[in-house]
Length: 77
Image (cartoon, rainbow, N blue to C red; front, side):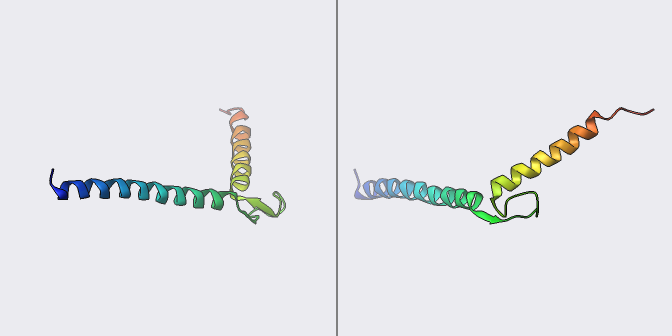
């Protein structure tokens, strides 16, 4: 086996492990961003320091309740 072939295989294994660490760092950053408390974007309806996920779930609940109310109204001909 040529020495060049062995060295390229070792480089591929090292790079594959490095990309896994990069994915892990990006994933952890996304989790921190979603769970970190931030000032409320809807004053009065949410706690002052709710996370992004809490605010998103409250907004989706509000939109769905508005949609379900509108869908429950009778159709007028």
